[in-house]
Length: 168
Image 1: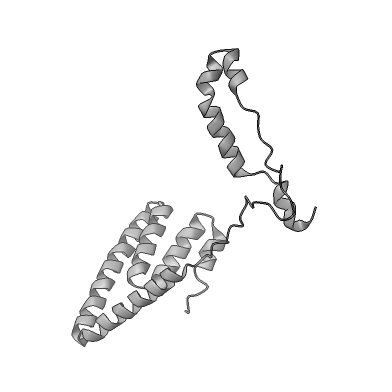
Image 2 (image 1 turned 120 degrees about the vertical axis):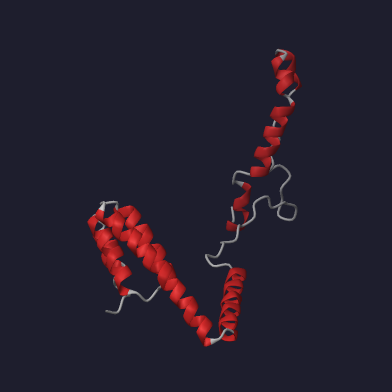
């Protein structure tokens, strides 16, 4: 057989579904005894009547999904642009106040993380330090605290890896 005709020997999902539907249709008939078994139609071989000029392709090739859909890239870049434009429209004083608010929230999460670290709840401490980093990205103290909590959990590689991007 040619490589283009390999679909003839492959299992067809369409035929499997058709068999299941026939089985469901004849299920009640088979419960009545031998009478239902006699009425069941024999299976038809799908390769009968297939020639070089007369055939039907029953299997289609599935496309590989990309890891980054195009729509999401456009959407996120548009959001970044909108956020940027909103920040430009705001005055310098408003930006400074927003930054101070973010620092206050991050400081609260850092305190919660320190408290959990003292109680040896390192998972919660890592959670609080990560939340603080979401508000203030450029704080080396938060990264160091989170790395120390990861090291206390004996996850040395992840603890050190979280410090690699940090310029001290």
